[in-house]
Picture 1 (spheres, rainbow, N blue to C red):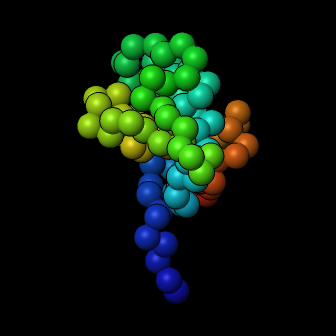
Picture 2 (cartoon, rainbow, N blue to C red):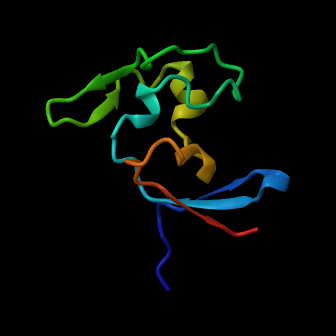
Length: 99
């Protein structure tokens, strides 16, 4: 059986343990709608689109500063729970509950 190199496990305690697979499709849905973390990381609120978000010529989105603390403290691992995808139908990640 092949191992999915994109698989990452997130333990949400009593809310379950989930394995996320897939790669970011760079749709920008999580970045265009304000703070995807809803303050969970202690970050300052972002109204509207993230100021680090840029639109590329091919229509995909990218972060302009992957060394910025906001990116390093959350964006690089988001989403961690299937609930994070409810308002982001274009997101290419998928989750499987394992516990």
